[in-house]
Every structure is written in structure tokens, then in C-alpha cells.
Length: 443
Image (cartoon, rainbow, N blue to C red; front, top):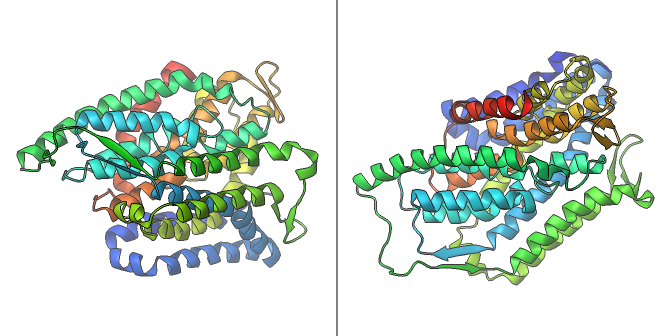
């Protein structure tokens, strides 16, 4: 079914609101964000209903909520809760060298506990250790680049597109071959970050900002360490959701809403395990840990409201992409990398990944990785995977943890750039890095 482009107006509208309202009318955005999001969501249903009838409009919006948004927000909620019960405490001051080490640790963790898990685990230590500094926004921008995105490319646990690829027959360990690409990007970005941070650090020192150096020994203690078990429990739930559909018992089972829409049993199991982990984390952790972590519900509430609108309004855009994807005549790695990445910057990277993986599987290649969608050449699969994972860093809405990191940074007094301000950073810094990827790996 070909989707008319005018049904994408609400998606463009919601993006412009996210970009412009916090700059032009911040007070209105703060008070009326829910109303604005609901307006664009309702308009999506109206436009689809005008073209295809009310049933199609409602079912399309419901599909975005049931099959995409629910598991997305439950996973984010679970990780937010568990990570909020883990506190790193010590007297490490946020110097350029310390920050490079923290970013590197978080980047490496992302492939094994997910970009969202690593972001939620590392964000509070990074904010705490740099709390004495005035210039901190660049630290969180590179945090998003590395920990929230690029670090998640090595395993299906790292980022949802790779999990979807695993469900479609891509071997679990295949993505380890992306290690050289990830290491190059990480090294380049950490080199750039270090020089940015050195300049900012020196300016802070010159203006009289000083860390508390009253303690002689450099120590680092972790409170709520048992919550790592609940973090592993959440990771296990994500893996289970990718493995169980391979068994006949779990296929086509779930809670039906209409003849075309149901909530899969595997998603129910995944969400139940995640919510149980969050509940147990709160029950077994002293409330004082959350208090010292400055734990609030503001960030997760903002993300929940914002992304329900995004998931509804992007449905027509995804249908347009599914229709035109096979007609784009793209069959080279650099084309797959750039187009998958560009669209993943604004659309959910999981369905975007699936569109181009399906397209690649339909091109009748004879050599490569045997997937359920067909044979896909290794270099094509590398390009699609890196495009979907890496370029989620291009905008605040490109990947789930990006906006969460922004929101939590804002909560802690870090003045993060606007939507377009952030894109200036991503275009200026990530653009040349991705061009280097094209020249070295995808040309």
C-alpha cells in the first residue's frame, strides 16, 4: 500500500516542535508538552483515517504503541530504575584524563549491557565527578556519541537493530567483526574530546573553579552493587525476547486486540521480567542511595510523553520507507551505510534497519551471511548495522538513551544545546568521522 507523503506532516510537525519550542517558547513547552504531543498524534490518526478509513488510522497508531512503544518504554523504565539504585561515590575529580577513561569504560560496556543500560549506569558518575565544573555540556554530548550509540555495535544486546538482525538469522557473534570500526571511531572521538575538554578544563581553572581536593587518597566506592544482578536480569529479558520466537510454541501467541493486532507473548514475558527487576531493585535498595543520586521521575516522564508521540507520528513515514525502500536501487555498502544512518537519525533505527536488511536480502546475492531474509554480503550487512547503530547519535531522538541523557543533564544544571544546536555538534564532529568510515570500510 503506497502511503501519501502528506500523512507524514504530523511527524515533521512534532520534530519542529521538539526543535523550536524549547528555544522560542520554553515555558509553553514545559507546561503544554503533553497537549502538543497529543495534537500531532491525533492528527496522524485523522490524516490516515481520511485516506484509508478510521479503522486503518486507529490500528496503525495502536500498532506503533503496542508493538514498538510499550517494550521500548518498559525497557527504558527498568534500566532507569535499576541504574538509579547504583551509586558510584568517591573523590575522583572530572579532569580530561578521568573523563576519557569514563567514556571509554561506558563505550565498552554498551555492547554487553546495551547502550541504554550503559548510559543509565554511567551518567550519574560522570555528572557527579564533573559537578565542580562550569563547562560540561560537551562532556555529555560526547557521552551520547560514544556510550549511547557507537559503543553498542558488537552484540545483539548492544542495540535493538542488531537484536532484530539476530532474530532474522544473523549469527549472535557475527557483529564482533565490527570491532575495528568501533575502535577507530572511539579512538578518533576520544582524541577530539580530550582536546575539547583540556581547553574547557583550563578555562574553568582560570575562572576559579576548583574540585574538592581535601581528601588525599583517590577512592571509588559503589553502593547498591547487588543491582547489577537486576541489570543482568533485564539484559536476559531482552535476549529471551529475541530467542523465544524461534520456538513454535511462542509463535502467533499473545493478547489479541483486533484481527490484525496483538501483543506478542514474548513481549509480555520480556516486560514482566523487566518490571519485576525494577520492583526488586527498589525493594532491596536503601532509599538513601536514591536520595544521594538525586533520583527523580522527571526525566523518564518527559521521555515517556515525548516518545509516544514520536512512535505514533512516525508510522506513516515508516510505511513510506517500506514502500520505496526496494525501489531505491541501492546495492553498495556506502549507500546502505549513509541511507540507513540518515533515516535512523530521525526514525526509529530498528524498523529502518529491517527495511534495508530486507531490501538487501531481496537483491539475489549469492555470497555472504545466510539470513531468514536471504543472503546478505558481509560488507552490506556491516554497512547497514553501523549506519543504524552509529548514526542514531546524529540527533536527540536518533536512539532511545539520547534524549534521556539530555533530560538528566538538564535536571542536573548542565545547559545542553537545543535540538539544532546538538545537530551542529553531530554534523561538525561525527560527519567527518562517518566520512572516514566510508573511505576506509564502506567504499
